[in-house]
Length: 268
Image (cartoon, rainbow, N blue to C red; front, top):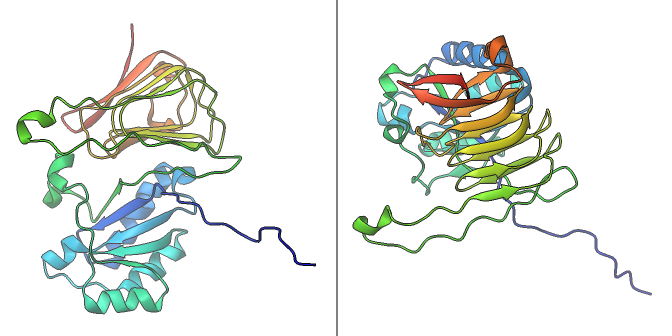
């Protein structure tokens, strides 16, 4: 009698993964900068996968060893899962470490889209670029908005971006990604993560992590009726709970960028 029960299955998923963009090839300086960032949000970076982006280094003819970078990242608790923009030698190093290499896709957000000058950045810049839509009891499966048809330059600005509405509580461990604005009618629990390319509206308590403008939209904002967030971020600039003023806690608030500074202001 044959066994007809399923052994496994494949499902299509995309994952929200930080991209580590290197502007300096000094391993010690990179590690120090990373340690400083991790200390600000240890739970956010704990055991985090990431992609190593060396395009800026190679554009500036600054050599770096993927072996050394990988050893350093693993030592501090980060896990490289890809290399982007490497030269032939770097790609071979990555492949020997069983790290996938991305050699063809070079259409990610430019630094200009973030409104930042790489010369003024630190040795390391992490930016979120891809979405999470994983199936499972602890994740929310999100259906992406349909891709807009290609239009002429004069018509692009008239295309509406679809918003996503979540009416159920967002539980700890869940991740939600919206390609437009994200509207949450219930609470966002501690340990949950909500992300949007546009604005985020939470008409309840925000206790988890909220990241708006994740594809570089610096005009995006976060609104909530009860600010208790672990982390808030606009276009990659973030503050953790330790750096949110106590007088703003448990109040209606909005979060936005002004002159590259993250502003948290009470909604009167």
